[in-house]
Length: 79
Image (spheres, rainbow, N blue to C red):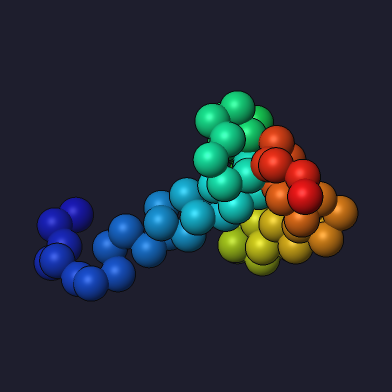
């Protein structure tokens, strides 16, 4: 379908990219790759099971869980 241009066209992609970078660890390429694979698997499984409407909520919960256990991200620098 043809749609007009809106200010929020890339909001979903931007949200996922933000979460992947934060969870992977700022400045860590391998952390971003690992987080992208993790979120890709979670998104695919949730869409297959039929819980696709909760993807944003699940992504935020995973981000909060990882950051509560590992404040620097998966492969981020430890202080």
